[in-house]
Structure formats: C-alpha cells, structure tokens
Image 1 (cartoon, rainbow, N blue to C red):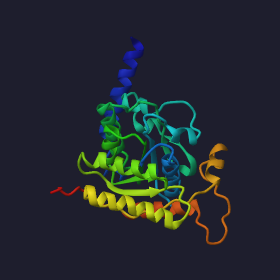
Image 2 (cartoon, helix red, strand yellow):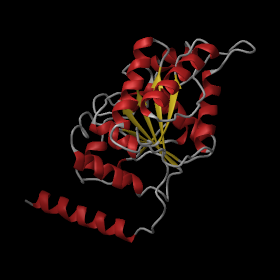
Image 3 (cartoon, rainbow, N blue to C red):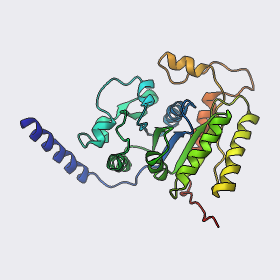
Image 4 (tube, rainbow, N blue to C red):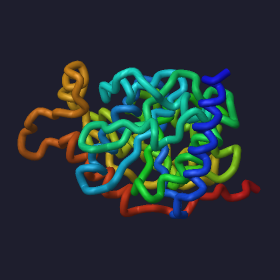
Length: 281
C-alpha cells in the first residue's frame, strides 16, 4: 500500500508542477508516416530530426509506431521508461525524454502503447502540446498503420510526410493511406516523400502520380517535396548502429544527407495552414 500511496503522491506533485509551468504556444508537429511498411519512414524521421538539430532547432522525436518502435532501436536507447509510462500517467514527457544523436531528444517507443486507445493517444498529444518552452518542432514517427491512430496523428500535424518508394504497390498504398485519413476530415498539409529514388525523373513521376490522384479523386492538394536518393551507405550505417553515414558521392550525384537537409529546410520554413478538403459535389 505504501508503494501505491507513494506513486499517487508523486503523480499529484507532477500535476501540480505542470500547472505552475508558464504557458507557451504548442510547438509545430510534423507527422511522418509510411504508405506501407519497409519504405524507410523511420529512417526519414530520424535523419530529418538530425538535420533539424544540426541547423539549430530543438527537436523532440516521438517514436509513436505502436507495432515496431524502430526509432528507439536505431538510436540505441537502452531499456527504460518510455511512451507507455507517459500514456499511463506514471511519468511526464520531460521525465522520459532521452538524448539522441546530434542532440535530438527522443521519446522512446513502446509496442502497442497507443494501439486502439483514444485516451492514451489524447494523453500523449496533451503532453506534446506542453513542450513549447523546450522544443521548436516535434516529429511523430507513426509507422505505416492506417486507421484511428494514423487519423489522429495526421489531424494534429502542421505537415504530414507520407513516405513512399517508386514501386507500384508502395504508390498505391500511399494513396490509399491518404484517402482513408482524408475521409475523416481536415488534416495537416500533406507532403509525399519519395524515398530510395534512383533518379530525379523517377521521383518526380511518383510525386506527380500521387498528386494527380489526390487532386482528381479527393480534391486534396499535396505539396511538392524534395526526394531522397537511394544511398547504399544508409543500411550499412544502420547495421553499425549509426543513422546516416553516406559515402562520398561523385560530382553531380545526389546525396541523401543533402536531401534530408533540404527537406528539413523546406519543412521548417514552410509551415502551412491546416489543409482542408473541399466538398465533393
């Protein structure tokens, strides 16, 4: 009983401390989602966070994939308190954040912590909204699952990066994910991100196909976004426990590292008003 009483006492003290914190605007939120699994959404989220941090932004990366907390694994974060402790109310976000590469702050993930639990989802969003004094941007890595989780995290975002590759199945699944979420109402401005692209023309073709389908069938406009070139150095680096260590590229060849920096710059300087779907006649 004393353990329960002590835990309750600590919870009351934490809530009192939160009420004493000065108000600050909620930080902008960028949701990173995969059109399907294995398209590199977590790689994009991590390297985007690192690019933000290297440009001087204070970044919080939330590993919110309820099925595979890959960002936590890639950052090499040791076992400890994580997202499940926040959604249960045992800890605040500030108490759980861990330092990651390049100075990013990581909220480690926990499998199924947010799965089909609207109250848990709302609790973490409330906690995130209180990070305005400590973060310039919050990235949500939500994985490739469609449904209520994706819808909720797309709707709170200023921008949604939907990661795809150039294969036909990935393109179709990306459009399907956008369609499912758009059917539930307004969401953040959508940016398809073509990952592992072999060329500029291939990436442009994919982006145009998605944009045209969204415009024609959903009356929803997407935003042009830098593409991420195929880089053999990324999987090699990740096997070594690193995020991104691209090899030297020949003159004129696209660099994944530069692409992530370009993506961070466009996202950071292009906060858009929340996109709203027009009524279909």
